[in-house]
Amino acid sequence: MELDAVSIEQKDQQDQLAHLRQHFSLPEGVIYLDGNSLGALPSNVSAVLQNAVEEQWGQSLIKGWNCHNWIDLPSRVGNRIAKLVGADEGTLICADSTSLNVFKVLATAIKLRPDRKVILSDTGNFPTDLYMAQGLKELVSDEIELRLVAPEDVEDALDETVAVMMITEVDYRTGRKHDMKALTQKAHSVGALALWDLCHSAGAFPVHLKEAKADFAVGCSYKYLNGGPGAPAFVYVAPKHQGSSGNPLTGWMGHNAPFAFDLGYAPSVKTDQMRVGTPQVLAMTALNAALDVFDHTTLEALQAKSIELSELFISEIQRRCPGLELASPTDPLKRGSQVSFSHEHGYPIMQALIDRGVIGDFRAPNIIRFGFAPLYLSFADVLKAAEIIEEVIAGNLWDKPQYHQKSKVT
Ligand SMILES: *Cc1c(COP(=O)(O)O)cnc(C)c1O
Image 1 (cartoon, rainbow, N blue to C red):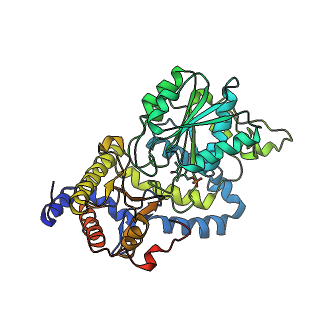
Image 2 (cartoon, protein in one colour):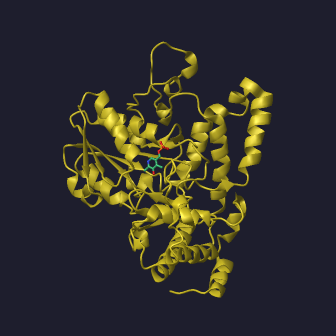
Image 3 (cartoon, rainbow, N blue to C red):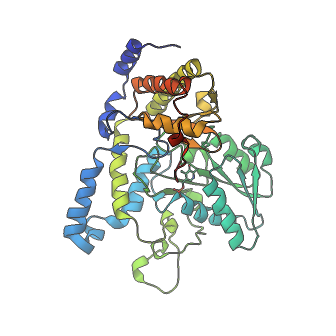
């Protein structure tokens, strides 16, 4: 498939989702292919935040907890995210960071399987998930074993020693996507629980937590959900586990009656048991506004466009840049909304691209990663990005000292 500028223009004209771009403020001259790391700014967020600061906080002061219902933001925002990941109302809350939520949920899962000690995960998982499991293991004096296998071996590694399978649906480097339904079913068949990390799934394509019978899920909201830098994460607890609390971070907001100020802890029997302390009102308010754009489309439509964008990108790059090796699955249904290539000079190549307004990112050791957020990307963006990538690689424009200098965040 080779498309010229005219047929690309036609594709953009026929694109049913093109109008969604108006909901975002993006800088001129930038092709933003990093919405999988930090989503773009939805245009309504600034005014909503300004109101939350000046009117709500400034004028209502402490009354805001009741009159603006700040106290229920975790469940109000959670219920909106629940709809995007196939979960029922009341089963998902917005809280803390993904890392913290992994810890809370892992400890809960382990408690539900007292006769087992294995947390099973794969080597494609995002390191923080694995680090949190390691921290939990240290805390309980090695009564836990973290067992890591290659991503393709997870299914075979599920056996009766596994207490909980902790899997990230989409691999942050390659975009490879696990089969949530099949793995959860296998986990349950050996008596294990299933914890899914949806960081690279939520807001990118349909997720069916309830249908897949997932036990727990976590995810962040600053990637495809566009909640803003450091936006609070979410945590899902299947209805059947709601009564059996195991959250070891027993803060007052997870208590069944926080304002009774009892001296002893008694967990909420709802998903609120995953709450810890006071919610981040301003950050959750920004996220709540950012979610509005999802009221104007469906995840099925977003996925369909994401597939078209990424297939176009792959074919253009493969034609123009034979030195870049595709690191993502070729079957679009087996990857998330990102496309990665490997190249030994991936780091300076990405810096040269960013310098020219094509923003993706680099993941060690050699992956250059491009995210396709269908809410705000056009087919013309993809073609233009491919042209710039070709220029940078064919002309060795990346080979300059300033592009080799590593920043703290890559
Ligand atoms: C982005 C990401 C995280 C981030 O965790 P934080 O606690 O928000 O820093 C965790 N897990 C996965 C799989 C991710 O992709």
